[in-house]
Amino acid sequence: MYIWKTPDSYAGYNPDGHILVVSTWRDADALTRTNWDAAITRLLKAANLEAVGSLESERGGWWNAPDPASAPMIYQWSASHWAGGWIQYLMVRPDAPQAVLDECQAIADDLAAYPALDEDAWCELEYEENSNHWRDSSVRDRADIIKHSGSDASIFAARRDYLPSDNGAVEQYLNG
Image (cartoon, rainbow, N blue to C red; front, top):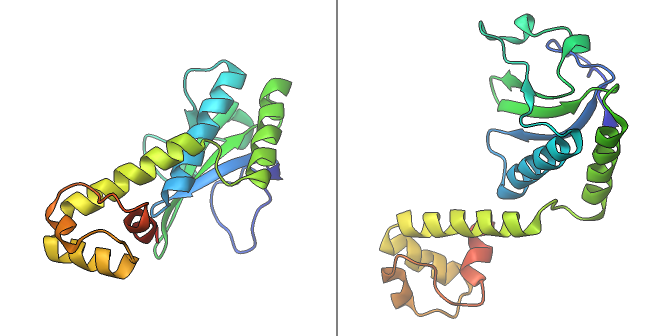
């Protein structure tokens, strides 16, 4: 488990001592976004809650966020930067019930052992995004993808709006 410690040269909401479970950001990949969703699902189940709390204030800005001592048991909060966009944190208070703290540790252990908390959801999201990318690409771009991916698919597969059957070469290429 990672316990939040205030970074150097930091000004913003400061949940010092709270548990940082996972984070995501504006340009996060499918794995990061899937882990975010899976961690929320697991924590809500452990806490027997319907939704994660949020520190977003009505007037906006970290300066209006509540004192960390009054934050919900499981909550999310966001920070932004002019160059990097936004980052969102999933946090748990250190005084949460033991079942929630145990789940935080289980999530950390699972991520240390394997990068995906829900491999099926990760694969589905990647496939959906790759399919959408392929569908939205021009025929010329699709042909270039086939060529550069090392796919054994015919160049004529670029005419179709669905991914070619090529043992995943195009998908691997699109995943970067």
